[in-house]
Image 1 (cartoon, rainbow, N blue to C red):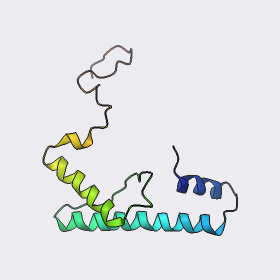
Image 2: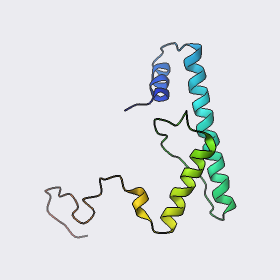
Image 3: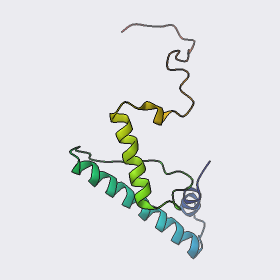
Length: 110
């Protein structure tokens, strides 16, 4: 579940010494993440949305995917949401939308 950068960061924080290659990988991944955030934020601001901060969860192939492809993918998701095309966001786990999970607790009113 954890990606390589997360594992390396946790090892470093726990006091374990990383190799030069591992340190380089973490630096490059973090720089790429910040660059994607910056480009996406600037594009959205240019389009008239006053976005103050933007965070996302990189996938497994984040390091291998070109920066512009990642930014364009994020922009496509925004475009789909604006157009009401929510099928783009279907992860196959939305079966509870019409039937929310039951906690077993009594319903109360405020």
